[in-house]
Amino acid sequence: MFFEKLVRRLIEMAKDLKANLVFWVVLVMIIFLEGISGLPGKNSENQGKKEIIILPGTSSSALPFSSAVKAGNFMFLSGVIGTDLKTNDLVSPDVGEQTRQCLEKLKLVLAQGGMDMGDVVNATVYLSDVNDYEAMNKVYSTYFPSDPPARACVQVGKLVKGAKVEIAMIAWKAK
Image (cartoon, rainbow, N blue to C red):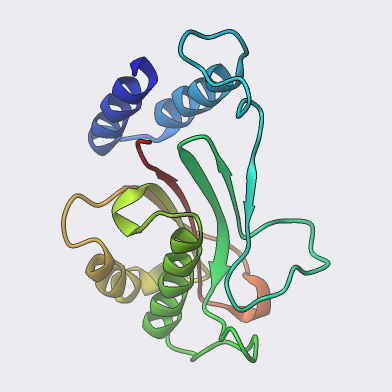
């Protein structure tokens, strides 16, 4: 109960933060504390366990990461690019279409873990060209019409497969 109230307050605070650093530090501290044995009201059989979530329609690959990891009330979603699930090719050279595909794939991963876009508390958007910000944001905003998550958006040197956008997320849901 204490941690749920604290997390809710942190989510509210994260919306007002100019920098995400405080949010991340406190979030890591909460996750650490959630895993400490002996805390009052903790179910010892679930402590320290994590659940691996795999993007539907894909097989586990030889790559050394999971689509998402669910730990307690949190789900940490790896970054995805706008590739087609069947062909693994970029859906389009257009940043808007790539953004839409990224978000659709993330919705699938969230659903696999029993969550949805309303549970997303933080997103990180990586653009290969910051000049694509407005086009990406036009599509992104349709997925979060109200109460959007905290977000960072940065330009990077290059993305896998020549993608124009990659998006990673953190979600939280009260149990």
